[in-house]
Structures are given as C-alpha cells and as structure tokens.
Length: 200
Image 1 (cartoon, rainbow, N blue to C red):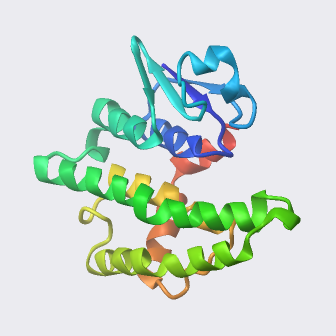
Image 2: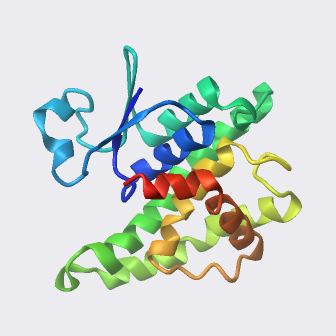
C-alpha cells in the first residue's frame, strides 16, 4: 500500500490514520506545491492534491475517505462496531471538513502562508469569529463524554482532531473551550500522531 503526501500538509491526517491502525504502507513523499502537479501523480489524482492512497487496484483520494477506508479495513476498535456509530463517525468527519476546516484554512493562509502584502486580515479575523459556532457544538459534545462517540477514541476523533490540530499552527486560542482543548491535546499526543509527524 502506498500513501502519497507529506506530513506538512493535509496528508498528515491520513499518515496518522495509517500509523494508528498499524497498516503496512510506504509513504511516497509528494509535495503539494510541485510534485502533486506532475503527470505521473495527476494520473492517480487528477485534482493535483495530496493525499492519495493506492492499495492494490484501489486508488483513493480525499483524506476523510482514505481514513474511513483505513479504519474499516485495518482499524479494529478504531472503526465503530455498530451501524449507528459508523453513521455518526461519517457525520463528524464530514462536519470537521465543512464546519472547521474552511475557517482554519482562511486563518492559516492569511496569517502565515501568503506573503504579508497579500494577506487579507479582515478575512482571517472573520474566520476566527466563524469558528465560535462549530467550536461551541464540539464543546457541548465533549462536555458530556470523553470522545465524539462515547468513552473510546475512534476514527471520528482522529478525523476531527486532525482538522482542528491545524489551529495550533495559527496559534488559535482554544482556552475558552476547555473540553475541546483537553480532548485535542489527548488525541494529538497519541504515539501514532508523533510517528506521523516524524514521517516527513
């Protein structure tokens, strides 16, 4: 199995999932700025983005799809046992992508990635305010249980934590969300995440 990407990109979340489930995989270091636009890579992922997973004759892109696949195939307890919890894991995974990530990416681009003269500070400020509503939803969920689906860490936690972990890069203040802050620290301190970050 080959996983294309680098840890300094969205591919980190799929590297984390592969490490968490103990999958036997090769990380093919593929940078999102140049390598992902080369013809050989575009033949696998015509979007020109990372990550991409190749497992036998399956070529899969989109990090959340990859992670749900890895959890189902290799994950043991990481993949929910019941139909209800599998549906909730999918719900939370999509929620992280639609409710959290756009705001975090706006902050990241306009506070760090773009040259200073190209940054839109008003857009970054609006994104910070926009995070308040989804973070309140997450805080409410994690105030009544340890993890998104109950007491055990699951692929839902890995997926949402992988998205929210980018907030640390932009130094977003989570101190007003005590349950979220504690949960995120617990998720991202897992040995599998440490190995994923070190993978390169």
